[in-house]
Amino acid sequence: DTAVSQTPKYLVTQMGNDKSIKCEQNLGHDTMYWYKQDSKKFLKIMFSYNNKELIINETVPNRFSPKSPDKAHLNLHINSLELGDSAVYFCASSRGTSGRSYTDTQYFGPGTRLTVL
Amino acid sequence: GQNIDQPTEMTATEGAIVQINCTYQTSGFNGLFWYQQHAGEAPTFLSYNVLDGLEEKGRFSSFLSRSKGYSYLLLKELQMKDSASYLCAVNTGFQKLVFGTGTRLLVSP
Image (tube, rainbow over the protein chains, first blue to last red):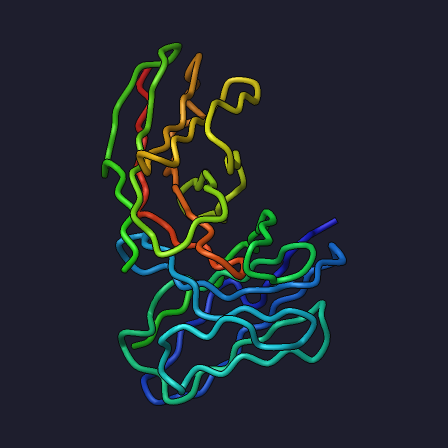
């Protein structure tokens, strides 16, 4: 019954490593997102994809690369991890298109807590 | 730029009413959302306003004034389980949500 799921839930790794976080939604939604929530609990959008097409690409280091194999999946690959990448990463999804004036509720996954040592 | 302000923390007593304010100045506006986030969990959707006025949903209501760039979330008959962070977010276009820093609400017996 899980709507938006992420794996892993916890990820502890060393600086310089490369890691991936996976996200899947079974809601039949067309748009998926990645957010980063820092230690001060500030939630900031990183990317969004609509039907496998990149729509939003915020000012994020190019060490972060999203990949959408199909509209139900959006993965996040991070190269050369740095201490500042430690955060909780949330995946979300919403129904419908990504037009300028279109608004739909975003549903969040449980989050992946990344700790870089 | 985008600016969304909320109080950092509020406290209230079980059974009381609390109002959490949110003011915003954004480059675009396609609606305002309120989310609830318990510690260690995902944000969950509470309410959405795109037109001026009050939206009521059980113990929760949300108000919007677009001319003033202002919204509030009203929680009635507070329960202990309402202790959480409340996030105000504006859709600035293309489904991009810009979040405030959140208000941590502590409900005491």
